Length: 59
Image 1 (cartoon, rainbow, N blue to C red):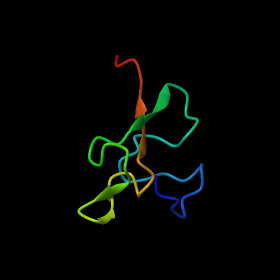
Image 2 (cartoon, helix red, strand yellow):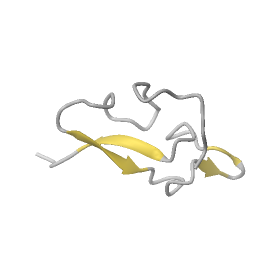
Image 3 (spheres, rainbow, N blue to C red):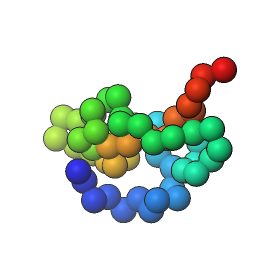
């Protein structure tokens, strides 16, 4: 996985909320499948982390 310059509290374009927000959880990025890379470049959805924060439960 890529060690990007993102801190654990920063958000990426694909995040639905900030890390730690109640009712959310970490998921593998659906665009890069957790690799953090697409077409030999940093994934734009997850910012190269391979993870996105999404709502859980779905109401």
